[in-house]
Image (cartoon, rainbow, N blue to C red; front, side):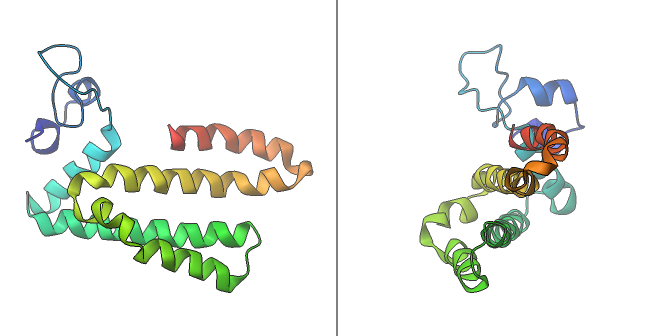
Length: 149
């Protein structure tokens, strides 16, 4: 169990430990997978339903649905027809390759990564299309970079 999920929130510990709650700078072994946002979402799940597995899985299903919807919106932003954008979203939602990301609780990191990447892309897409919105693009770019990082 990761103490960042169920103990009192300690920001220093959150940023010093890996995904599994192991200190990245001390100790014998850690794979140094740094995913504080994912750990925070686990913390929120724990606050709502303790370690009840169904709550964690429901959040992963909702994240997968959100990614699918954002992918459809991106398709429309890239001038795909509504039918193709819907097909793109539906194929992403139903494709069996996403099984592990949705079923395994730790797959949330992949879903959050895609979600934030799609949000950043949707924020920046209008700026990349129009040369007159260069100043708007420069304002949006730092937000997009922060979302992706």
